[in-house]
Amino acid sequence: MSYTNVEARQQMLDQLATATEQPARAVAALTEAYEQLDAQQADVLEARLFRPVQHAYGRAQRTHAGFADRHRMERRAFTAPIPEAPSTGVRGYIEHAMDAVGAAEQELVRLQDSLMPIEFGDPELRAGLTEVRQLIAPLPLRARELVRVLGR
Image (tube, rainbow, N blue to C red):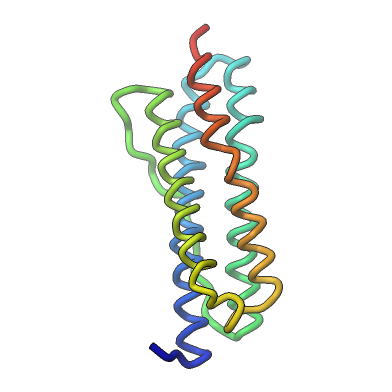
């Protein structure tokens, strides 16, 4: 299937927007988890998960906005969603957050594997995609470690 530059760039921007929405979901879920923890556990959650997810979310937004601006395309406005309320409390919120992180990772992998960022993108887009993936890669393991020690 052949693409025009405009179509390919719009598709990449849409995929990046979909991937960017996922860390927003994770931030919302981790915020809820944070509110349910004592101060010490909340600080650990913030350092191990919340700040890295927030950083990845910010980087994804900047990557999206920068690519849109460089190619005179419309930016998408990202808003924080209301998290789903799991029946399992803090653990459930962390699981929801990691599901969102996993969904972001899958979307970014699909985008990078398509080779469209190489053909129709630019170095800044490729660097942003790589950085977001690097930021979220260690989070599932950190989440498992954190959940294992919650309540101890």
